[in-house]
Length: 212
Image (cartoon, rainbow, N blue to C red; front, top):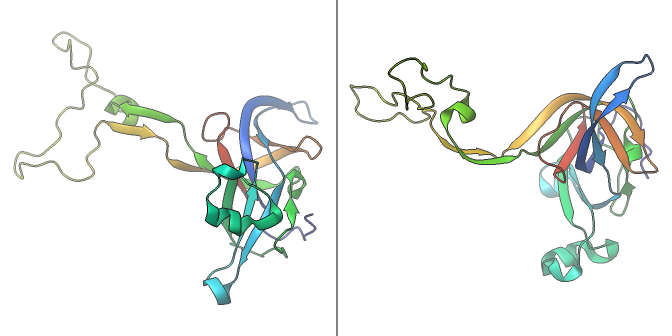
């Protein structure tokens, strides 16, 4: 299990569950998100000499072995048939971990400040009002069908649409990182973290929790 000094980098794979309310000791209500943390296993340790960078690869969750590619089965070996695999590069003091070590929710403690990354909700093809927060056209007389249209999309001189012009298109389903969130509670027995604020994605989204 984890047994590191407080200065080292902490990280874990979690699954977003739902939002709830947390009452602090002084009676304040804190909006928080529950993250379910399955026990993770270290499957690889990358070194500067061999790989050119330093990182730790961890895996968690379970799945049927028949649904795992043969190269991954060989990589996991007898450690298990994992569902999620993530790699964390070291940004500060690295922990002393070896292949086969396990991590769980007890990695973190209340008061830790973390960054949480995940894939945001996909919203499909959307117009400019929803996608780019355009205000739209006036709704006065003579604007019957123009309220949510984008307006002009190009200049008269070049006669073309410039790259990067904000227009309608696919929205969401992007990798989003929410920074400087506080861990308000840890339940190691249930394998849960309670993080202040909202996190990217829907219920069931896999998130990466990394200490500051």
